[in-house]
Length: 248
Image (cartoon, rainbow, N blue to C red):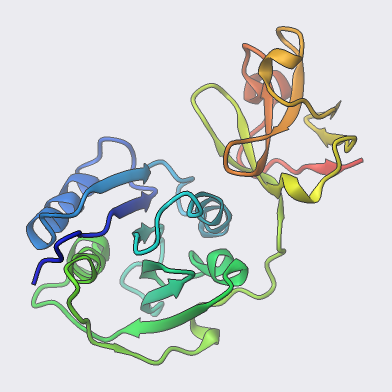
């Protein structure tokens, strides 16, 4: 069955922009859910970094309409003991590995329910569950079909020791802007941040500071982002993934 108004399927992976892995998953989704629009939200999540990915994903789901299906694959333990899972949270469906990737989404949700995927495809490559397991499940949900699932224990997929906000760099874009795991709503306008050996003040946007000046701002998805007006914060401040942010 194909839904008359098929929901959007959103891809969130560390596979790399333009990789064959993305193409193979999109092919499975097209065959299984041809009426769904497939959107590449991120293909360049920091490699293997499940924790950073969890905060990054949670910051980007709010703009999508209810019913959207998120197919998330940041899965360095593919083929191991971690379960495949489905999370329903505040009207969205998340399909992917039960390794902590959906922890922050679940923690911030008003309503959520998690299940283990018990359905198995005829062919399951040990190294490519994204194509053989998660993509078919996402396509089935997009078509309004049921999938065999079972109960899942919190201990199998939750990461309760992670902080509510992550005070470090979780993503660097091609401009050299550094996205952090801190939500800006929790900080005052006068809050100073320490990073890269400098003390940074808040600005509303790039043009509010002189060219070449570093600052922090609330980005379009509500996260604290470190930037330099018409420059690279990564280069100027020597930032990398995992660089710590201090509240001063």
